[in-house]
Amino acid sequence: MNTSHMPHAIRSAALSFIADPFIVGIAEAYHFEPDALIIFENGKIKSFGSFDQLKSTLPEAMEVKTYKDSLVLPGFIDTHIHYPQTQIMGAFGKQLIDWLNNYTFVAEQQFKNFDYAKKVAEFFLDECLKAGTTTVMTYCTVHPESVDAFFEAAIQRNMRVIAGKVLMDRNAPEALLDKSATIGYDQSLNLINKWHNKERLSYAITPRFAPTSTHEQLESTGALWKKFPTTYMQTHVSENLGEIAWVKELFPERKDYLDVYDHYGLLGKRAVYGHGVHLTEREWQRMYDTQSSVAHCPTSNEFLGSGLFNFEIAKRKDRPVKLGLATDVGAGTSFSQLQSMNESYKIAQLGGFALSSIHAFYLATKGAAESLGLEDKIGSIKPGMEADLVVLNLKSTALIDFRMGHCKNIEEALFIQMIMGDDRATKAVYIAGNLAYENVHS
Ligand code: GUN
Ligand code: ZN
Image 1 (cartoon, rainbow, N blue to C red):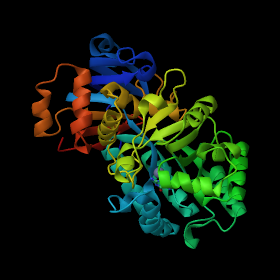
Image 2 (spheres, rainbow, N blue to C red; image 1 turned 180 degrees about the horizontal axis):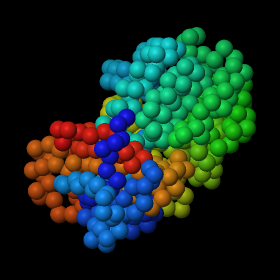
Image 3 (spheres, helix red, strand yellow; image 1 turned 180 degrees about the vertical axis):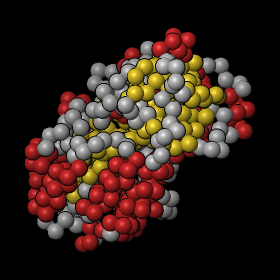
């Protein structure tokens, strides 16, 4: 990537989060700077403040790129996504288990081929950047080649990503199964040694979900995480009622769905659970007690008819669970986190809760970073943070431009963007201070 013409500072309106709006309320949660200067140094943010205050600190030769009618935000973070499912987005028909069998388990077989996986990983990461997403936590497939391909593509873009080989040893086509729990363990261990903490990469131990792993595999997965406690653990939980009934049949000895994972030592910091649409109070409390995180996947939950996520329960003030926003592509229908926010607003409305723009943008930035334990590196704009930023064009379509003419304040402006905007609103993306994507039409 050519970085020679990259600016060292940008001037624009900018917004960042300082606290969780579900806990402190909207007004205390964010910092808005209508005319900000952000100075980069060595891939990090050196300073962030009002242009007037900071301009005297600018070295004379430093190039400043100015963005008008724009808003700079921390790059979006997608806490649950499947890069190999890019090719099955918008596949028609039925709910989770049928969709997995009819489309997902067919597509994922192609990822044994490294070259194929690499091409898809490249396309996928470019789509993420186009949507303003600078960090993803993604599933690969059961094939180690799919992980190598993904991490190589991420290194080429210098992106901070989390990924891992899917573990499955039952209830899926033969070609997608680990031949034994030991083989799945050994392959994951080799991948951890090869990739975890290399440059901006982290490894996630990835049992797909309880129904596709034997007791033996879940046990070895827990042992592996214990051996490498700084890695992540990602899986799915309580997405769909049929799935939950199936888990009950497969694990009758456990209290509930989450208790299956709990039994095998899979709860804790850096454990990220996709969906959690139908969790019980006991399970929410356990998520909170163990500091596990939930990835809310609105477009996917709607697309597969999974159900309505409940924000008020998830973020109940006496036990707020760490929550991040996610697309869950390919059951999710858009790479754009603006579109995820749009749908999460509607889901909240159907449950009697009005999700503000500040709540929604927090869940895609600082909230997501906190749910990944990365809040000291990404997810907000402040000195010392890695300079992963998105520049939103606030007038990306004629209709949004017109609508913005009737907008009173920044909270309204953000709301308009999340309801009406999509990847056309991404004007530019910075990765570690370098321009990584620019929308020439924007
Ligand atoms: N549960 C287990 N695997 C998957 C998957 O690939 N997508 C979704 N949405 N749910 C799952
Ligand atoms: Zn998923």
